[in-house]
Figure 1 (cartoon, one colour):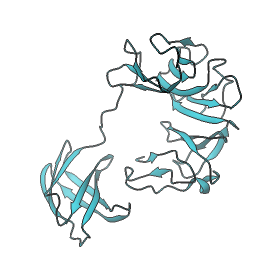
Figure 2 (cartoon, helix red, strand yellow):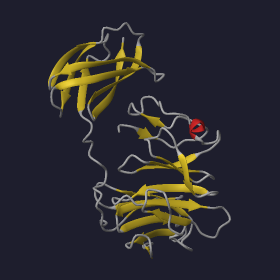
Figure 3 (cartoon, helix red, strand yellow):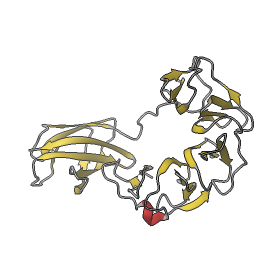
Figure 4 (cartoon, one colour):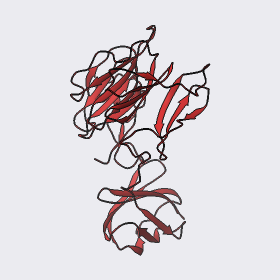
Length: 289
């Protein structure tokens, strides 16, 4: 629904409706999180349920797009990652200090209930990459693991990794279709072959479009040139360097060059201009003289 969710600590804001220009969500402390709690992982499913994985107090879930959260399981330890599969299964990596191994859990009912631990004696679970419903990669302190049966059994994929340091902290799919593994001090590795995936890698920015403003700097009256978008009403949001919204108004734009006058008397400085049309939006820095 046009929101960005961010995991932070110490009761900072948790979501933005302005592409990260400012953060206007409720504080963690107002949502049932303690003042000093750290949120390590955030995931969203296709029905706008928000899952927040924390340090020490488990997983919290929102069913109202981040307006409120309720505890959804896992006391103690740290939730290091949360990922949602295409079929909307939720996977949670969870570690408890002092245990000989980490934990991985799956929910098929949107976080209402969880399987028993799916990864026994596979090392601490640090990160998850869901390539498809039946292809789950997990990075642990013992390397990279793959399950092709929804997490019920695992194969170790450590060929070519540094045997002296198999701690995997991140797994990401490149636009080239290869899996990349980030380690704790032993570099970054790339899979030899493309992996089976229903995910296309780095997403194309289909919900953004290109625009240019000139002159830049300006006095608030400028030419805006847009591309990759049809004509129509565009909402202009101007934000100062402190994140304060100081101007918001709709302007009718045609594809190509358009003359705009904000009709504002503004202090000289750097501003962020977000131009949006429905679900399509783009943001640029502009200078006011």
